[in-house]
Picture: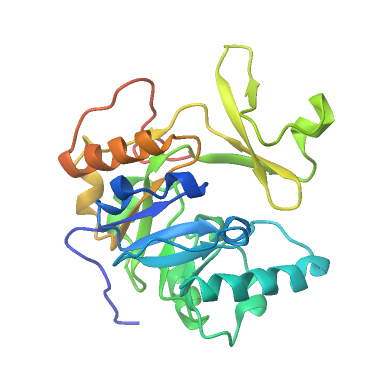
Length: 261
């Protein structure tokens, strides 16, 4: 279709893992959207007032037997003022169809070209996060049939396991920091995921604040993905992206420059 939803410069979105990370320092960034896990919202009494749209992240892996629980959590999220849903796989579509939600695509949909964007547009999505395995040049040249989003900060997920790695190795200690160390000494954070699964994160966060490239790709949204960061770190990094500050500590530029060949 002859559609062009590209923008001259993207607006920020933020993805948070814990309620403590949702601070004034993060909201001072004036993000377009704040993404929060659905299971987190089940235990949150209220959300701070903000101009940002609250969206919930649906579990990456779920089974038919979880459907009633997820629907109850969605009802709770609606009472908190959540209006958008972040869908990470095609199994989410029938779960939320007809619910009156604003639907957005997450990185799990593996959007790699404009045909993918067109397919998701026909499925009712209003925007989609592009694969973080794309190069900047591929993102730039992609026809933006849907408003496109890209992750520009954060630990990128490497894998999700069906069984809890922590329970299998040291008993159930999911409520404290856990890491998987490789032979080089790199520590890969292990985050609890819905269904008592484990999501393995990269040992180094993606950092692009000091690179102007991502601002010139036609993206509508640029996501800061906070996982293991403290509330103070979240606020500091938001300021860093506003100011284009250089990185402090170890980081990666991801695959945006070299791709996956």
